[in-house]
Each structure stands twice: as C-alpha cells, then as structure tokens.
Length: 76
Image (cartoon, rainbow, N blue to C red; front, side, top):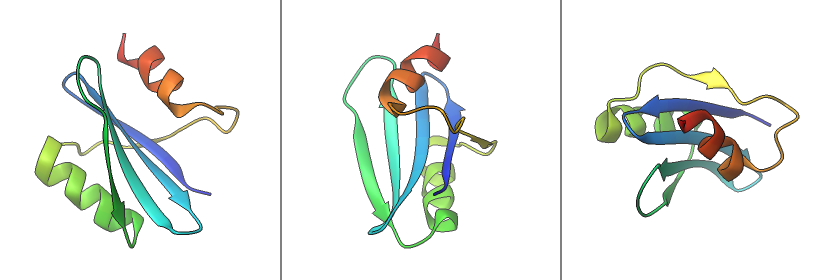
C-alpha cells in the first residue's frame, strides 16, 4: 500500500492508500487535522499542490505504524 509524505510550511501531508481509495491527511504542527478522499494518488497530490503548494514527496518508511506520530516527529 502506498504511503507518501510531503512538508508544506508547518504542515505534514500524508497520502495513504486504503481499500476504499487514497486519503490525503493534513497534519499541521499547530491546529486542526483534516483529510480528504481521492480516487488516485495523483488526484491527492494535485489537491495537496493546489491547497498547500506541496510538490516534493517521499515514501513513509515501511516500519511506521502511526503516521500521526511520524508526522509530529518529522515536523520538528
């Protein structure tokens, strides 16, 4: 399953593939978390680029089980 992240200012964005589709999670350092459903990873990346100006993506390490904790870790 695909899991990628990008940083945009104080927000970490994670795309997570699930059986239902792709979720774009926005995890700001300070503030309200959000997510949105997308039909493809490309659609999720396009939304992240439009909304957050996120363009550089990397894979979330395969051993990460809690992406919220991971987002907090890499946002520092």
